[in-house]
Length: 72
Image (tube, rainbow, N blue to C red; front, side, top):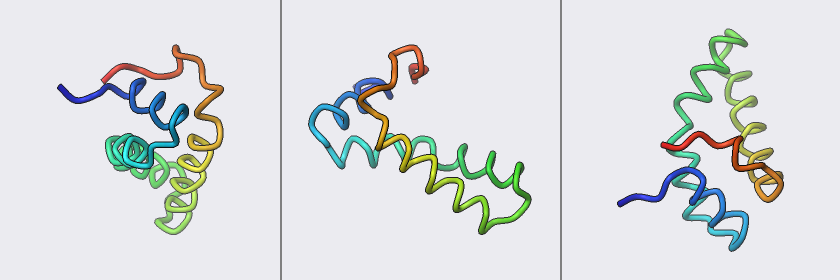
């Protein structure tokens, strides 16, 4: 059974597991990109948004409350 998003986030936050973060990012990349593209209307800007979203996720992983993560 694959780990859920919370387990992956905890693995990254607690152990700096790049594998866990990569798996989490790959699960949500298309959704984040498509949302950013719809909001910005421009692919380059959407890519910038995606980068910022995942950088912030990495930066704040330890401080996110459990309620932030919806279980997959």
